[in-house]
Length: 163
Ligand SMILES: [Fe+2]
Ligand SMILES: [Fe+2]
Image (cartoon, rainbow, N blue to C red; front, side, top):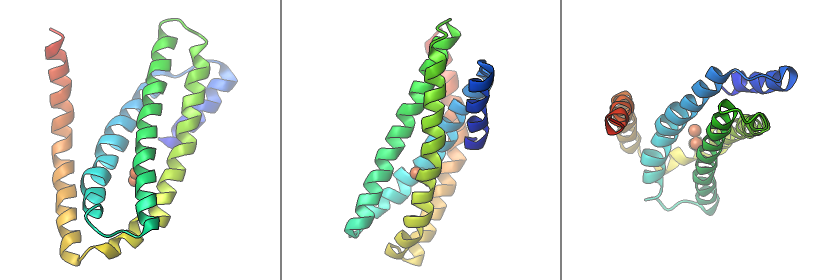
């Protein structure tokens, strides 16, 4: 999705038109997959269990940064969506906002992923026993299993509230 949105960002600059459905799908991808599913398992399971361990100063610092970066990702996706909504309502200047927030996201995510993959996840496994890792894996599975039900329950409840 980062690659697709990066191309779209360059496309908007060249053609001065935006593929709105792609922006909407990108927002859903970041909110549902990246934030709820992926950051959800990191924050609600892995980081929760790491917080109970005596982490090195370096690992504690990286974990705090990752949590802050998740917050930044969420906020930027929200800004992208509101720029898209302003654009749909006829505010052509909002196109610059769409380009700017896409740029922030496509630069932010690869750096975030590299920090986790190259500097955090593997060394952090040392804090856990084999049993603890297996418990976490089962919790990840449970988390994933419930997610699609949660997404569509929330969708329907949202419409019900608007009746
Ligand atoms: Fe993350
Ligand atoms: Fe991650």
